[in-house]
Length: 274
Image (cartoon, rainbow, N blue to C red):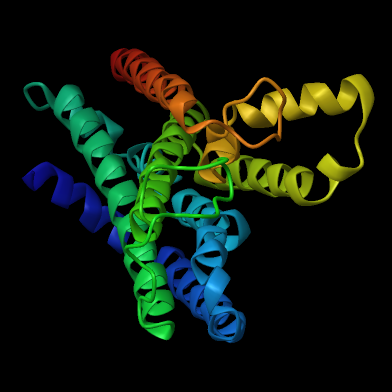
């Protein structure tokens, strides 16, 4: 744990990260303020509207915070010319890798937990948590779920956490290969913009084989999982999913996360030997 806090102190020193946090907080409260009117007017469908928060903006904010918060993590020693110091300690590379991975996982948990508590807390307070413990009658991604409204919303944030870990692994791999923070932010941020552009604009316009290929890629990408689109497991992309099949995408994303961090370990070991 002390090594994880040491890595966290390195990240805390970068002013651009704090600027990103302030910007994300401002955007979150702007989105919540804009939602407040529709929630109080349409109380009957308020929990259905709250379910769509991840689809509309929480997933995008999470991706933004991951890019600005994790891109420098694997590049720090190289850019500060201190990478040689890691090898001078007993098990230095192994301990450093463990600390960086531990911080990444903790960072994902904290980001999703904070966004979830703030979003659900403020939205729930606006409607007085009315019908919070009633069975979820309307679901964004599934025909029906055997959960209450607030429980289903909490499960959605667990799904978001899995997608965040999936994306975090990718960011760390890109950073380890490139050893350059600017490239990592530009590349991963560019993928975010392209993905959200496809989801909200191009997906409605692409048809035929190209549309199917793009839909397949999005379905198994980290952005599809962060937007919860990939959990609606069905034979046809975009259709409402069946709750009893939710274990399939969960198993896939867990396998993908394990694979990414295994690749990251191999890349880090190779880097430590050179």
